[in-house]
Image (cartoon, rainbow, N blue to C red; front, side, top):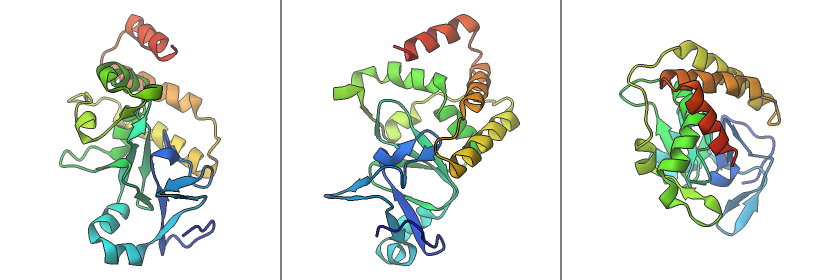
Length: 203
């Protein structure tokens, strides 16, 4: 269904790779392509979804990170349990490690991980520079065994999420810079290396 103002107790928003940006969705901002049709405000009835697939209904209703599968770099959005993700995405649920998903999304949407993705998976690039991300690629992303300054990462991610929820066009540049600095610090990346990474990403 295509409903702008809906009861989120009855419906999930529906998104796919084309309506995912880092930290936010383009739901309502850009039309969602589904099979042969396009929808401005696509929603899925929760009860009907539960009848079709209890697994998809349960995944949609819990905290998660949704990753766009077809993109030039990782684009991940956090969801508290209000979105159903299409098949063109990968969903990350809270695992056995119990790492806060807001820490994880801070890493995934960072400059450093974008650099890793674009260099490590360079051979997978298709026309237009797009890479088809899936579970295998995501599992290869490096992650520190010991995470420092967790609270600061979560704090800035929360600010970004709150801003984006209020206004998709909100300026989040200050928070992104703070998160990037924290991620670089977690991997002990020095200033010369940071400069090289930034120069590469600007190409």
